[in-house]
Amino acid sequence: MTERDLQDKIATIILTLLGLFIAYQLLKVILGGSWQSESIIIAFLVFNLGLSWKINSNIWKVKTKLEGHMGWHKGKDSK
Image (cartoon, rainbow, N blue to C red; front, side, top):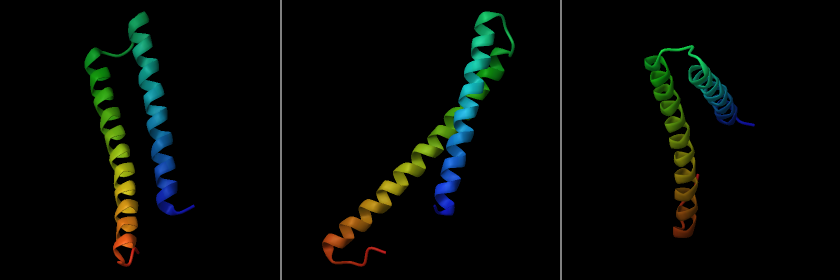
């Protein structure tokens, strides 16, 4: 496992925990209130930013692999 894979797994775990915590807080607000609505909106924005970053890093990996594969078909070095 490379360092990059480890970082991706850690980021996924952190995002999952953050999402579960936000869902818990949202349930508490619906059932009687815990956070202010502004705090929940900011938490969702931070969660959305994290998910966007994670999706973008996955797209970057696929693009890199695809460029290497296409380079192989063109006879270029794919490293």
